[in-house]
Image (cartoon, rainbow, N blue to C red):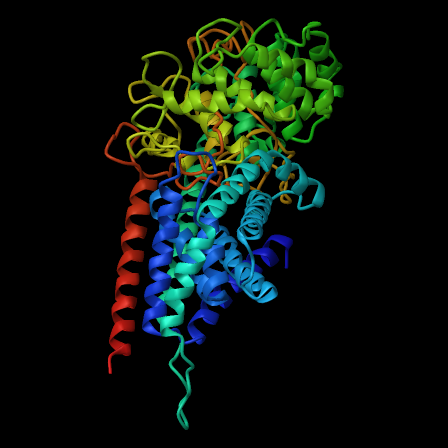
Length: 633
């Protein structure tokens, strides 16, 4: 049994055990009504405060429920609050973790009541709620590590937790304030209600008691179904796009901007990065006996610009190939020599951000990149965003690149928060992001937005405009053969666009950790599914790069993909989650293989969620009706 399987098994036992405990306690009808009312209050405490990053009243309400009426009702209120509120905020693989986290908070409240004999004062109760916020955040940090796969170690967990410290502090501080203001009053109100209907069950002779009802089972099934739908939708879109990329590989091992074209080092680098994000080591992807890494080695003389170096270092690192000894060159040393005394790379925001990412990927410590990070912070505009260079107008790509560069170098503090606010303001109604100004959304800018959100430990699917998330936008851009179109009206440089988008739909931020080689060796011809999950390394994004201007080059995306004219960087949110709440790990919806990219009536992932949601709702209603009938005398 793997470490991840053991954790998920334990998670399932916690949820099943908690609901079974509640049911076996044989709650009277009035207790059931109280649990339902408190769960509704906990849901409202999450939804109403969603615009405030990671501040919710839910944790306080759940803990106080356990404190006032017991562990089983506390668990039920916490678990119900998570699954029901996510009907609005976005269901996904994180839902069971949230259910377990808040359920355990309810049990913790009951333990606190037992220890203190319900004699805790206002300050003590507020302190307990604050501690519960940190404990809940610690569990969700674990869910990030487990959900992303890869190395499962204390060091990696601590690194993930360090990125989540600002979010956990905001959560705990909000809990403290709410409990100080209303905690004792809520305890008194719930306790008075409880005292009116508390009585002891006595079973008659031969009476075995009612069986566990179907309601908690249905609720647990809802969480599992939504988690499975999220994982399945993401996997289908990823595998389809991965196979398409492998099919267009040229016989020299490289990739063209469009199928049938000449191979390019810039596009090959992007294809390699997309394959790595999907769990495929480029060394295993071969055509005519040649791999993308072999093509880059053969054509190393075309890797000259700063953007070329950054992109190639990242691609080599993801394949497990040393960039310090590639061919006859030390690409890392060459990149270091291009950094100015101010810490910037050519005075450009994107190049500087991607320089940080490449050097971090090659093993540089965050402290060695402090000057570059300080330069990025100083280049931020008053509106919270960044342009391609200091004092240039802000755009989502440069802002996303800067935010991820700051995250990779140890965090950006106020700069990160204001940059996230800028990005939320400029998201367009279809859920996507545009390159700049009043232009239309495109897949590459949207992909960088998702990567930035993932780098921040947030849930990109909960960042919505007019009800649409970035994943909804990408779902509409995926063609029937699996590749992603640049926009609703353009299908330019599809290999480049698909390579970038693969990073987003797999929930990966740069640098991507090295991908294990396939056990069966290489491949020739059409692709096959991923060979293992790959975690994000340090949080950041890399840009296309190219001969002319590299990752931070011209303000046009793909005017000349062969020359790397585009630049990209993805938005990074404040706290993540619904409309600012930090949520762990994977996207709630993602593009799938079915559907024509030109359609605008809804993606396959959206349809899957609608169908799954309606089915779950029908199951819950049927279970509730059956439960009610069984309770009738």
